[in-house]
Length: 114
Length: 112
Image (cartoon, rainbow over all chains, first blue to last red; front, side):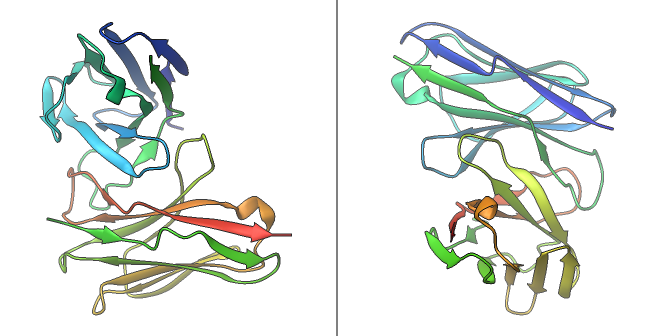
């Protein structure tokens, strides 16, 4: 069966510090991968998605970036965090090329920027 | 702009009642439809998917799809306090690799 991991689970960072969040998927090959952010009490905001190694689509212009160095690894980064970057960061995967494109979420990383 | 609309709630129902959650979507070519449940502080989990017009039942959950009206709903029978959560509707507008479009969710509160 497929499993999706995210770490760290929680993170408290000062404004202006760098960020690196990691997501890995087990039990499948060539997944589509997604990064979402959910601000407190708000809906899901799609940040990036990837259909393959090195292929990243950005949905929202901001100070975040994403990379996919390996087939089942997706990394979210920032060089300098802003207060507004606080939120719940969710990684998700879906099977490549499936018509339905069902998405499955990881456990999330709760980021607080102070 | 592809949109998925949900009433934000809260929707309060007594324990044992039927909870009805509704969702409308803007794009007629939408292919697949999903309901996710999100408990406070947790990530969304898939509870139902539906692809064809009509009803699909899974235990206490029934998803209903009406493509002509661009409407999808989720019924929860015999609601329990453990069903209290935010329910997210999601739509796959195109086949294949494009991301789902999510609604903002409806918060359900089941009162014991």
